[in-house]
Amino acid sequence: QRCGRLGSLRFFAKRELLFTPVLGLAAYFLNFIFLSRDWNKDRDTITRTFQGLWTAQKKPSFWMVLFPEGTRFSEIKLKEAQQFCLARSLPLPRNVLVPRLKGFTSSLEHLRSRTDLLIDVTIGYSEHDPVSRT
Image (cartoon, helix red, strand yellow):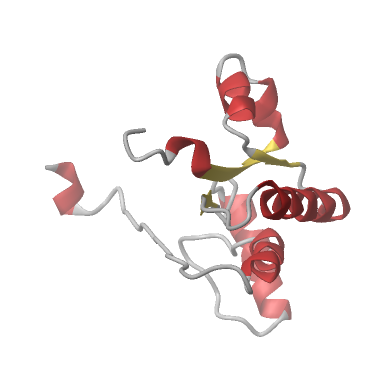
């Protein structure tokens, strides 16, 4: 908050979070971008969000946080992801799901001409990694 950046965070989150006691209200007041996982609705939500950012400030400055995998890992979801990859001749994932990229791609389309910097932070971990047990 000392740097004045807390209000500049823009998180993408599942719409269900909005109805979680305390967290939902906090997310609402922090201007989270709530997505429903229905691309027709979400495309409009993303477009409205960025149009609002561009009209609210001459040169808006914000941090956008997006977790493209966006779901909990399970064996069933892994098999679905592998079938998706097989059908498209993509590399088969063994430990992760296929990222959902429509929202990210749509966001980049809105940001492309107005963004100076994009930082990708990817975190990997393993519960079997001996270093993480220390």
